[in-house]
Amino acid sequence: MKPFEYLKPSTLTQAIDIGRQPDGMFVAGATTTLDLMKYHVWQPNKLIDITGLPLRGISFKNSVLTLSALETMTAAAYHPAVMQHFRVISQSLLLAASQQIRNVATIGGNLLQRTRCPYYRDTSFRCNRRNPGSGCDAVLGANRNHAILGTSDQCIATHASDLCVALVALDAQVVIQGVAGERVVPLTQLYRLPGAAPEREYALLPGELITAVRVSASAATRSSTYLKVRDRNSYAFALSSAAVGLDVKRGVVKQAHVALGGVGTVPWKATLAETYLLGKPATREHFTEAARLAVTGAIPQKDNAFKIELVQRIIVQALDETATSR
Amino acid sequence: MNDDSNRMPLSDLPKQAGRRDFVKQLSSLGFFLVPEPVKLPDPIDTPALPALLSVDHSAARMVPVTMQINDKTVKRTIDARTTLLDLLREHLGLTGTKKGCDHGACGACTVHVNGQNINSCLALAIMHQNQPVTTIEGLGSPEALHPMQAAFIKHDGFQCGYCTSGQIMSAVTVAGDGRARTEADIRELMSGNLCRCGAYNGIIAAIQSVAANENKLETKSTKP
Image (cartoon, rainbow over all chains, first blue to last red; front, side, top):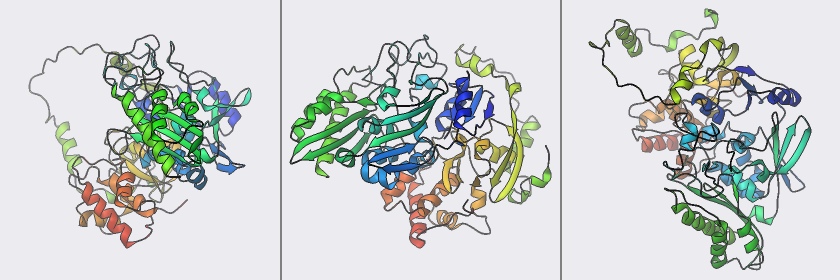
C-alpha cells in the first residue's frame, strides 16, 4: 500500500470537513478498502476512520426499519425485526461474503462496495472506472461474471452487493449527511449507470457520509425471498440473483417487489416486472412473463449470454417460493 | 522504541532454533545463491510496474498503538499501514496466525476480536486498538489444549496444518454462538476458511463433537 495519514474524527462535522478535502477516503469495516489498497487500485493520502462516529443502532418504529451505517452485516442479518419483517434483507446478508467479513463489514460500506471485475482490480489492465478514458479490457476479455443490464461501451462491470438488491427491491431510502446538512433519497438514486463516465460511481458529494438506510415494512416485505445462484455453495459472488417480495390476497398479487443482482452495473430494480404483476393471479405463468419483462434491454457479453435465461428462472423460482411459503 | 518490558514473553516461541531460524541462517550464508546469473527476458512494460515502483515508502507514517492481545496489553510504534495480521506475526512473534491470501478470501488469518472471528489481513492494527484480540496462541497451549484444539487432533481435522489456526478460531465461534443447528449450517458458517488439503470432514466432526459436548463454548479471552 501507499503510505497514508490516518485520521479518526470524533464528530460527524469533523469527518465531513476532512472528507471534503481531496485525497481522503472514509474507512469503516475496511474489508473492501484494504483489499483495493493492497492492489494499488485505491491510493488515498488520508484514511479517515469513521468507526468512532455515533452511527450505530438498528430500530424498528412505526413500521420503519432504520439500519445505521456502521452496523455490521452480522448484526443486521440476525436482528429480530429484520428477520421477521424484512426476510429478504436478512437472507441477502447471510448469503453474502463469509462470517469473518460479515462480522466487520458495515451497512454503509456494503452500499458503496466496488465491482469485482478483475480488470478493475488489476492495475495492469485498462479500466475506464479506475483510470478514466484508458479503455475497458473486459469487453473483449473474460466477461462471464459481467453485466447484461445497464452496460455501456465504456464499462460492463457488475455491481456486486447482495444487500443492495434486497434494499432496492423494497424501495429503501438512504440518509446522507454532508456539509449542506441531511438529505434522504431513494437508494436507487445513489447508483450511477456507467454511461460515458464509469468513474462516477456513486451520487455522493465530496465529504458526504451515508448515515442510515430506511425501509418500510409491509406484507410484501415480510413475505420475501433472496435467491442467489453462484459457482459454489458459499462465499462467492452471484452469477445471478433475485430479491422478491409478494403480497398476495385471494390468489391475486396486491404488491410485488423485484430486483436483480449479478446482472446489472447497478442493483437492478425490475419495475416492468413489478408493474406487470399487480392485479395478476399469482401463478407460474404470470411469474414467467414478469421475468421476461425483467430482462428487457439485456445485452449479453461474449461469455455471459446464459445469464439472460438464468436470471429469469431465478425470478420465477423466487416468486414461486415466496407465493407458496406465505 | 525498544521497550522490552512490553514485549510478548518468548515462552511461546521454540527455545532452540526452529525451522524458521534454520532457513534464515542458510540464506544469510549464501546457501541459495545461483551459481550463474540467469538472463531473464525483458519484463513486459505493464502499467502495474510503475504503480508499484513509484510508492514512496519514506512517506510512511509511524503511529503508536496500544493493543490487547491474548489478555496482555502491548504497546508498539508501527507503520500506519500495518495490518493486524502483520502486527501479530512480524512485530509480536505470534506466528500461529497465518498469511494465506492476504485479501480475506481464505481465512487462514482468522483471529477473534471482541469474541468474533475476523480476517486479520483485512484489519488495520490501529483500527483495533484496545479491543480484545485472541489468537490461536491465546486459545490454548500444548500443555493445556482448548477443547476445540483437542477435538481437531482427535477427529483428524488437519493435514499440512496451514489453515488450521484459522479453522480452529472460526470453529470456536461457530460451535459457541449457537447459530449452527445442522451440519449444513456448520459448513455454511465455516465457509470463510478454506482447506486445500481437504480436511473438511474432520473439521466438521471436530466442531460437532465440541458443540455436542457443551451447549455454549466460551472463548478464552474475557468479554469486553
